[in-house]
Length: 527
View: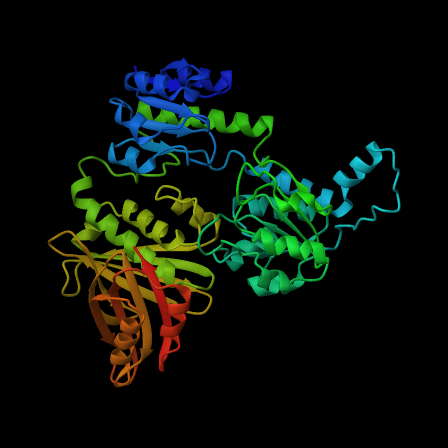
C-alpha cells in the first residue's frame, strides 16, 4: 500500500479521500514548518501533499528515497525545487483551476468597491464623519470593462461583468475569434483596450512579455479617470507609474490584491486614498481551499494507484518503454514550438503539426503536447506539457496533427505551422544521429541549424553586403557569433539568417539590428 505524508493543513475530507482510495496517509499539518524533521522522515513516503508552508528543497528531495509524487494544493509551486524533483524522477502536480471562481469573484468585488469607494466610506463613517457628499461613485452598468488575459479566470470575470450589464472587451493573443463569440466579448488589441476601457482588470500570468504591461506609456494611452484592478500577479503594473497617475488623477482609482514585493510593507501606494489594497486574498475562501485540497488528494491517489497523471508540471505522459525513442523527438517538437511561439506576435487561430517518416509511427501525443507547450510558453507562464493541450482547447486554438510515410530526404521529419489572423508561419526540423534537434526549414526556406541557448533570427531582403553589415554591427556591440546559418527563397527575395551568439542582445541592441537596411524582422530567441 502506498504511503502519503500530508505536511501542511488539508481538510479532513481530503485525508479521507486518500484512505478511500487505498492509500495509507500520515497527517502531520505542522511538519512542513520543521525542515529538519521533514528531512528525517520524507524517505518513508511515496507521496507528499503540501500547501505553501512546506519548503521542498533540493536537500529534502535528496532524502526522499521512495518519493514518487509531490502534490501542491493550489497553483504556486515556488516552494518546490522542480528541477531537483525532475532529476530524481518525482512528478510535481498542482491544482490550477480549483480557485478560479474565487479569484474572479474577488476581482469583481474589488471593481465594485472601487466604483463606490466603499473602503474609504466605511472608514469615514466609523470615524463618525458622515461625509455623504464626499463619496460620489460611478455606476458600472453600460461601462466598458477591459480584460487583459481571457483565460480561465478572465472568462469567469467576463461572465460576471456581463451580469452587471457591462460591455466587455478583451486582449489575449491566444483568444480565438470563435472563443470570443462564445464568451460574448469583443476581442481587441491592447492599444484599443487601453483607449476604450473605463475599468481595466488583469488576469494574465507574469512573463517577460507581460511584465509592466501597465506602464507609464500604457497609462498615458488610457482614458482619463480609468480604474484599474489587479488580482493576478505583482509585476504586471509599474507601481511607480501607477502612483504618479493616481496622484495626478489620470487614474481615478486602483484596487490591488497583488504587489511587486510581497508581503507588501510600506508600499507608497498605501498612502493614497484612491487605492484599495488586500493582502493577496484572491484564493482565500473556504470553498477554494477545500476544492484544491480535495483535488490534490484525488490526483496523488490516482497516480499512486493507477499511474494516471493530472496537472503535472514536469512530466509528459511517456511510458518507460517509449522514453528512449521518444525523448529526442519530444525535445524537437518543443523547440520547434518555442521557435514559432517566440516569433508569433498576433493572435493564434490554429497550430498544425505534421509527422513524417518513422517518427509518425511513434506515440505522437507527447510530441504534440510538447509542441503546444513550446508555442504557448512564451506568453503563458503557468503552463506545462500536460496542461498545454487543454489550454489550447480552452483558448479556441484549433490543433491539427497529420502523420504520413516518408516523402522527402529525411527519415524523420516534424513540421509545425502556426496560423494567425494575418498569416501562416512554418518551421520544420529533424533529429540527427547524435540525438540533437536541428532546424531544416523556416517559412519554406531550406537551411540547417543546430539550436543553441541564445540565437538571433533576422529576416531581410536578399541584397549584397547585408551579412557583412550585420556581422560588423554585432562585433561593434561586443556580440560574438558562434555559428551563422543562412537561407533564401530566391535571388533577391526573402532571406533568413539564424545566428548562434554568446550572451544576449538587449532591446536597444536588437533595435539597432532591426534598423539595418533591408531588415524586415529581428528577434532574439532563447532555448
